[in-house]
Image (cartoon, rainbow, N blue to C red):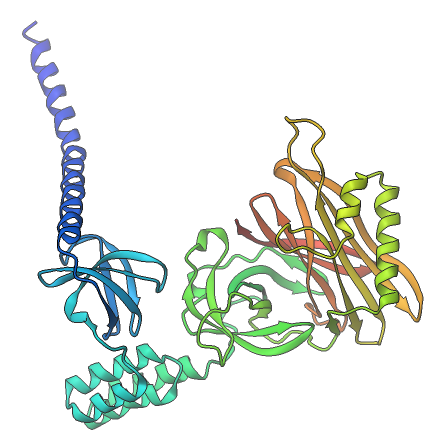
Length: 443
């Protein structure tokens, strides 16, 4: 027994020592929760409501009224905050920017009026030395893509004789306000999708008709980098990275703006690349003639009926597209460089369940018609029913010459159970067929 007892005691000591960090963390968490509840209760007992505005570059909102309180968000300059109460040097407030949040902000970071470009310039003219630099940085934070905001900082640095800092400020101004598209050293030709103002890598373009998965990392998306932007088959300036995406792991790699816009536009959609693509190989039109519309509906109904798909789902899929239900018919005309007119249509609808235990399923159809006057020839199609985790539906995205062969490819969004990806179609022996899918983004 005398030999066993020391070993037992040693083992118990090791276990106790291993548990100490977890117990300490649990106690610390409990203390933070208690402090949070106490601060909130004091706030409710002493309400002092007002509207204030962030007057510095950005105000850190914290979970507790102290400098080491956990960060909730960073509220940008000029943002309105609704103050609930004040405890010492801190106020409890809510803000809608950059997203709806509630927490504690230092009171001295807020003011009764939102700063403007004019008010900051007045403050700048009255200030001197380091204070001028501080105000200039606030002007840049308020209007980051305005050259005159950057000029305030450049002037202040030059006046102070800080040539190196002034040159760095000039370089930053050019990167932010006059972005250029450059293919990085060793970087392959890359195709990106733009959807809801987010950039997603779709494919590496290896040559004519050859696409591969795009392996991109942080180096691909430095803030302020520019990419060529395309939509409706044509070049449309560029998009510029303004922030890494909040959901990078889900494929939403970066938030972008489309100059002269200064923020991400939730409606911005198209294609992007790190070098020029073959714009002009196609023109996308959103409207079809009444005869073209009837031809699309007729061909789709024949296609879907021939596959013996659910009749109720077919009827629903051929109705005008319903954004709320995410079902119906969408059609575009794609005019190729040689004048050939394509009608590209997608149709989808939920398939009615036949049993309570049946997995959700959807009807999915793609139709490509060549139009010549009032003559139509089918040159590509998909008609199927998908279900469960494998559910997929198509939506036309754009048409563009991706590989530089002078002929446009058709690009679709492929909506799946928990996300979506992009699908590239090319013409082979007169027929349009999918050849690559990539650029997955999570739900």
